[in-house]
Length: 206
Image 1: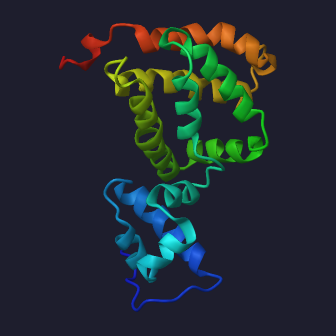
Image 2 (image 1 turned 60 degrees about the vertical axis):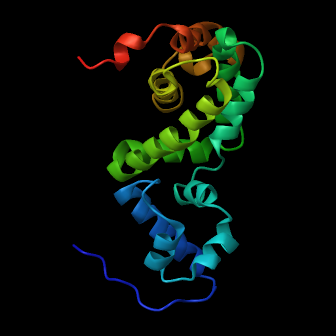
């Protein structure tokens, strides 16, 4: 069913922020991050575009608020990858992963994952988060040292998201009880392999 087009422009009020977030969620889910402009979101919400900048600053910040992730993972990933060699980045990523998931945002992160597993629109938006923020962070930090980053990042994501489900949702033992050091020692080498293994054959048409 087609949505009713809003008319007129409203100034800021207690409901303006939620109206902008609702419009952003709908458009990001329907059309994707790259295809939606700030002006388009403003039109959908029936507000002046300047109000989006007032409440959220940038399109990236609006996106993070719209999908209700309590923090932006891209700077965390970039900070980890900037230190040390590529060959042992997996261990550092695992330490950072546990620090984030066992930290103050634990319950909120679990809610996001559970929602994405049951709602296709949320899954699509999280995929955009991965493609727009995570992959870009890896490209910005390792682009001069690692090739085929989107392919490698997708394999790393399969490992990390699988770990989230096994450790925090299904609570499979002994994975659920391993500490950061044990996870880093066990899973880190797999991530290292994804970052360094030859993947040219995966990028060719079959």
